[in-house]
Amino acid sequence: MKKKKYTANCNPFKLLRVISIKGSAFLLTFFSLMVFSHYLLAQKSLPLSHPVQKQDLVEILKSDTLEIINKDGVDSRRVINGVFKHEGAILHSNLAIQNINTNVIEAFGNVRILQGDTVTVTGDTLFYYGNTRMAIVSGRKTVLKDSKRTLTTRKIEYDMANGIANYKVPGRTVDEENILTSTEGFYNTRTKEFTYYKNVKLVNKKYTLTTDTLLYNSITKWSYFSGATKIVNKDGTVAGTKGRYNTESAESSFQNRTTVDNETYTLTADSLVVDGKTNNGQGKGNVVIVAKKDQTVLNGDEGFYWKSQGYSKIFGHAYVRNVISEDTLYIRADTLYSHENNIDSTRKLIGYKNVFIYKSDFQGKCDSISYNTADSIIRFFQKPILWSDQHYQMEADSITAFLVNNEMNRMLLKGKAFVITEDTLVKQFNQVKGRTINAYFESDNKLKQVLVDGNGESIYYAIDDKQKNIGLNRVECGRMNLLFAESQVRKISFIGKPDGRLIPPSKIKQPERQLDGFNWRIKEKPTKEKTVWAE
Image (cartoon, rainbow, N blue to C red; front, side, top):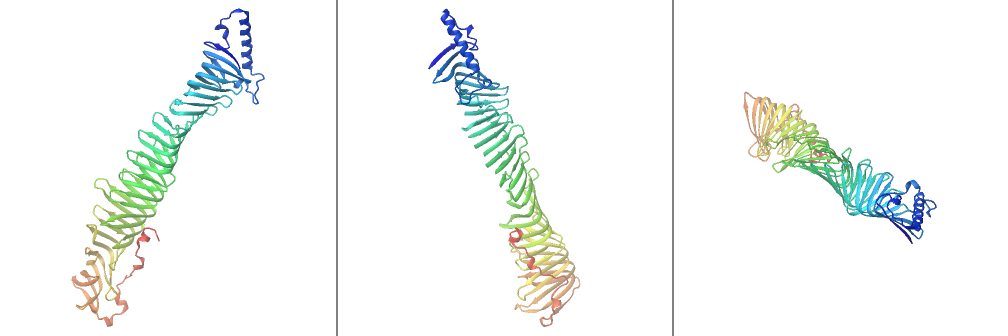
């Protein structure tokens, strides 16, 4: 092995200024050194299968000490406190070994790479492959900085030709707004795109995002993520598995099953778009909106939620569940609206088109419905019809149901009102019709009284004390009051002069058993399964 050592404060090829020459022999040695240095720079006849081109060789700008070494046909330089230049980049270190044959530099101590005016990489150790311009920097604190952010880790592989840095040990990226940590990561210094893997956490003063994989574009501010992902801010949490999030606008969109959860509601859907500033959300596919204060649940194919207004809209197989006195009211419609009153935490539910209603003690259908929990009033519009498991059916142009202590207390039927009760004793139907009907109920939802006001007509079967049918009563009177017990008429009184007759059982003809407009539509009564679109 041959070594030649030079000490200088500047370019080692200008050694004439710094070497003290004594004797002609030394002059010859110096002359030989200059020729050898020129030979190294020209790179003639290097024993390489893929020789390094002159313009690709890493250049030494200056050093404190330079040793030229030849061992086993391999030429190298040992440089102390050297500065190198290559393809526009500047490399610094305390100690560097430059392999002339392979164009590879091993550097140690205070390693620093400067690329252009924007990127700086610092560390303890550097392997630099000049032919590919790949730099591997490691150390207890390895740092890559550009004009707006700082990446800190223990080892960085930096492809300087393409401007891509990556790390495979835990790293931390900091900019003016965010702190991002992950186990692995890639950073494109040109496009300003980051790709992070494993245990990814993005912390902003407004939110925190955790995920498994994240692609972040610092120019567009969009983050694309996959794997179990959670976004948390002061107003709530968004959890999903695939989507994107804008760190500036706080807008997020998720492609897989996702849930938004805050103090007032949860919104879950197969795909979801959320405005992080307002917490408004739009979901598609098996949407479920749960109002936490009263456990009202809206379901449908597509839904919207406006948080500041406490307002929800849902459609496509839409239905709502609301608990009433430990029983659940189901309402189905083409479109459902829910509006929460933040002052008293009451709620108004509205359903439009093809409405079905199901509760354990009554069921119904109509064109539209509204239910206000503030006054416990349910309004049915457009020819509604209601049934009860207690064998009654009610129809009118509109029906208003009044709940007391969350139980049915009264129903007001307006316009072509018609009440039918099935008399299980005689296997026939008692009927009352009129312009307006008020129907009152007992605590177990049994019909106890019917008040008719205007154009009153009734058919009911008279029963004696021995529960024997004694005939059919047909009565017409402007106003009447009927009292029921066990779905049977027990007493009837009239205001005004009634027009009626009692027909003995043997003389009752079939047409006399029905008032005009009678239609027992029990087969149309919704089931729970049909109301929740399970049929």
